Image (cartoon, helix red, strand yellow):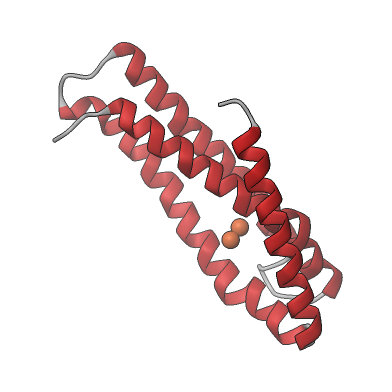
Length: 142
Ligand SMILES: [Fe+2]
Ligand SMILES: [Fe+2]
């Protein structure tokens, strides 16, 4: 078992950056558009998406903190990382649930209720916002 914590931290940082770009696009454009449509989906209202993004952010922060603590303390055995893996598992579990909800409710609802032009327009704005968020990220000091 390889315990390269520096490499893990680099991977985690780039994952965090990707996730933030993805979330900002959804939070500024996708979820509000869905909210505007006013569709009633049992257990699938817009606020669930906000809530899950917040939870995912908190869980990922927990993983980052766990990794930082391990890096400070140092690890010698595989079992030293078990708690961190458990945190990651919890994050992954919620992420899977969230993506399933988006892929089976949020995005299909938009595809069903928006005209082809509206969908194209939304998609263009999403891509532009994604490009801007990516540029902001690479300009930010890490
Ligand atoms: Fe999301
Ligand atoms: Fe998503």
